[in-house]
Length: 640
Image (cartoon, rainbow, N blue to C red; front, side, top):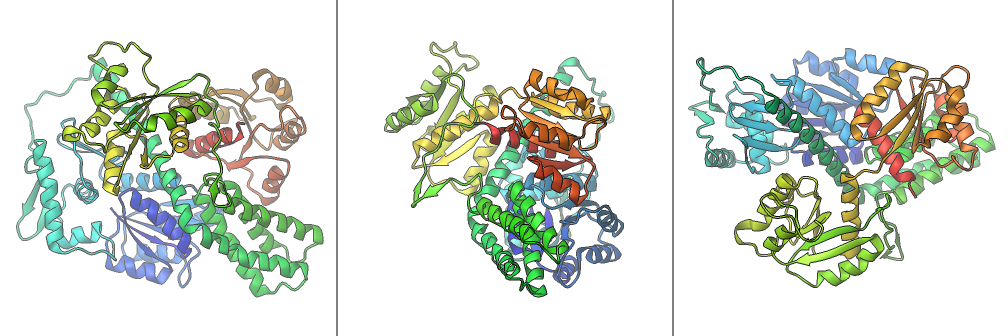
């Protein structure tokens, strides 16, 4: 599907564009409103993302103009303005949804998928055409339960037909939907992709699914009606299969989100330096403030850079940095006359901002050009893990075993897949004499007859779905990585291997499959909110204790000893800010993460929340993905 992104912040635009490209979308980027309008007039887009604060023509006016020009596909506004009147103005202009920066990439992708689903004829996330099933959430395609391995362009081509099943697409129409403005192919290339897709469909029995309409183009062949076929009756078995499929779909979505976050972290290396440069005008403005010589021009320039930092840092998951940048922006807007203490506060925010940009949590610390030694897992491994390395290179074993002692991991190695199967609790084989491994390190690149390594990877995902698999090899291309992810690889490390990185990744995988027991305490006088929180956290295996009367807070805290506390702001008898102060003043509990969940959005209250020691703030209403991401991140970061 082809999307247009109109965003004047080039770093943020490239970050979002790269993330969308990773998901298989075709992206064009415009950096001002007039260019965006030109793009929309020339090309066909399935969805348009608009920043509100654009040069030449703002996003609200552009949205209104697009609707006037009969653009009927979804428009998603992306902006840092979170006031109710701003949202009303955007929606009244014709936008379908409104995302407030900073937001995470997974949340943005979820909003886009939801809009595209509503745009299609079917609200189901899985597209079907006869015996063909196409799941955009997991990038999987099946014909009569047989998986199809498609190239990215073949995948996009099939999705285009399935989302528009009655439409005939000419070669020019396919070109507009599936190739960006900077990468147009020839008509021969389009024909080659059609031919390749037909060949792969035919190989699994889907003959003539795509038909040629001579003189016009291509379309899906109509499904023959079967009026005499008896209606399908549901059975307990089929219902169980349906429930299992839903559970698997949720697991696939979670895995895909984690891979997206990993890809965003990798992009940081490209954009860290230009993001740091944005601090320059802000630090110049502070120096001028200290000398009482801040000009309106420099103030405005610093304010704009702080605004951009607030949005871009949030996309990388640096929530605290985004909050500090927002504080700096509001300070520069509101404070015309400042005291020395206020300037010192501003300077402190900027120093903290520089620190989080220079040393983000996901970037390994380096000193004098040498990587600092990694620490054992954040979540302690209670019992020794067993890692089975399937690789004929036996030189790996000694280094992995030596490093494994630090990580409480026992490492064994086999050179053949047949030997590995004997070590695993595999269907059709006798139970292994030795305990089955907890993790697999599989080299798919060393010589296997008939891609045996990839077949073994696929079978592991099918028969041993709870066994994490770390894939390794040499010379992986992007298509290789996509294929390995689709076949069930949980992580991929290219050779040469670093034993510390292998063990660190392996332990992280195991922890993902075996999350620790967690207890949350939520204090809110609204019973509906407490009930909704239970609905959110229970499917994640998290225990939640709710409390409606804050006067019972201390005895409840000591009884349940939570890993994280959720507080409302306005409550009878004792408000949430006072409860936060009580927790932070006690040596036993001061380290426990505190998250505020409130409808109160005024700046003074939010500033007061962070001043008394809160770790995070979410405004109501809140979605499950946003809340659970914040909760899990806070708990993991708080563990020793």
